[in-house]
Length: 439
Image (cartoon, rainbow, N blue to C red):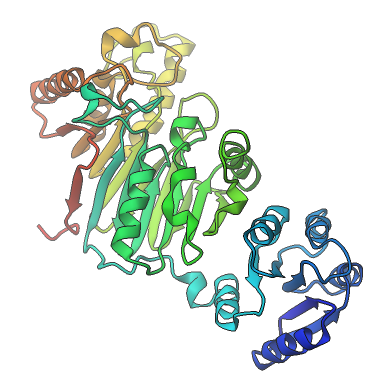
């Protein structure tokens, strides 16, 4: 039986909540003040703590901070109750509360909170309520690298930074949250028309052009919605801190803790995991800091997303992995690193790959963590890719320049006798992938 702790000096209020919880098979402890409540929490380790802000005979906000430091209970749902004003709501969440309930308590809302956090239907619904595609759907919302570049010269391919939407079954997966996620959030809100939205965001790395749009992601401001964010290398602390810091004053008027949507950050421990029903593989990439690429196994085929990677191809004597002519240790290391990437993307249906530079530009940008389109095409050909999207367009590249790069890439593929389809990622472009084997 789960244990709840109610901290409130109003006996009538406690009696009402206790009765309601006991009807739902909870064991309930009571405390009339915060100090007693903190002591009981250490002794009994409740799964739920419901603490009233102004009536806990002490500062409720300070109680939450003390409770979370050093977190004497461990994993616990901490719910604040208050008079419903915005400052109480935001302050409680910022101090460490997981949820907020106004008084008098709306028990329907309380039930939904418990369901979300205890594995009930609301907690496990990671699928969209919209009709599910039979195969998969891919849509680009941001394709630019480094910095957003709006303007007349970038209208066709788009100027927003990295954000790609993938739908597979009823799972909605968002790859990176660059500035393009703002329009995606608006579209999702209009599509669902008030129904709960459950989605997952896979972050490749925390360079600003891959996270800067999240403060403007509309679904994160609706308490009905659930947003799960996945990342590597200490994501629960590091990613939380990075996402939060870009929203601190004076940079942004609302803190991440004040976003009313249910946002959770999950650290990925291994290179193979699942997001909803979608198996995902990850691969660490050659890019400054910790950066990963993802391979999503959808019913419509595998989608590989490697937005930021500097391929080692230019360090080789030839472009065909030939290191037989007196290879140096550097060449051998480069060869090994690129072979790992080739095997990671091999035979995928779709490859979204860094192609920020052309070959001439790359000579002045070696070591910056990005690739040239010529190398990206060579990799796609080597790996047997069916469709390649050149991605992470340079902020100085106009629509005209990107089109020239695509033309050159297609010539390369044709000269090898390959059926590889080459496109440049373009905002608003949508690709429907039929179920594998249906053709």
